[in-house]
Length: 218
Image 1 (cartoon, helix red, strand yellow):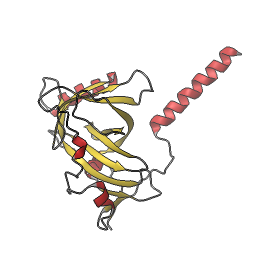
Image 2 (tube, rainbow, N blue to C red; image 1 turned 60 degrees about the vertical axis):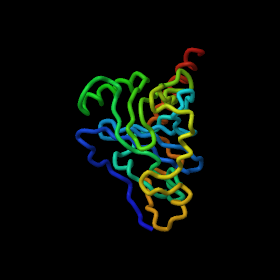
Image 3 (cartoon, helix red, strand yellow; image 1 turned 180 degrees about the horizontal axis):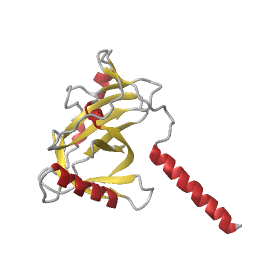
Image 4 (cartoon, one colour; image 1 turned 90 degrees about the vertical axis):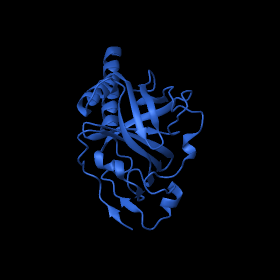
């Protein structure tokens, strides 16, 4: 079984923005939705997976950025590592903002502004996911909770896209790759239970608010 070290960044395309959706059979099955921005992958964990039905509003939890090279990883993360389980590349392709602009830099600027404002609109050109989508930050549940929603266009459908279970790279399902002795292995530099920088910032903010509240009451 091939052992793959943790990706350390990598060189992105000069002309195209890339996205990937990885199906991740960890302690709980979920889909990792990743968008390239500024050389890294902005990442959301989508418990129920993406949908092409505009009526569906799928919870997407913002997690820490991942290295650009991770978009191509497919294999197993051994027990004892952060995110232990099996990963397949469920979909991948290029994407852009819905703005009427040209060039990677111009699209990136619009996307970053949408990310900061909590309304990220984009157009996917994947093998499974196509057309316009939006990620919207929710008003409740913390700043890390977003909704992934398909816009109504020619690619919208009531069909369950998740029934297309195979990897777009290997053609294998999560179950088949899990049992494959030749599957790559990825060792995380993080340990289970280790808090991300985002979680740590949130904990510090809660601590500051609690201390201020105690002083006010005193």
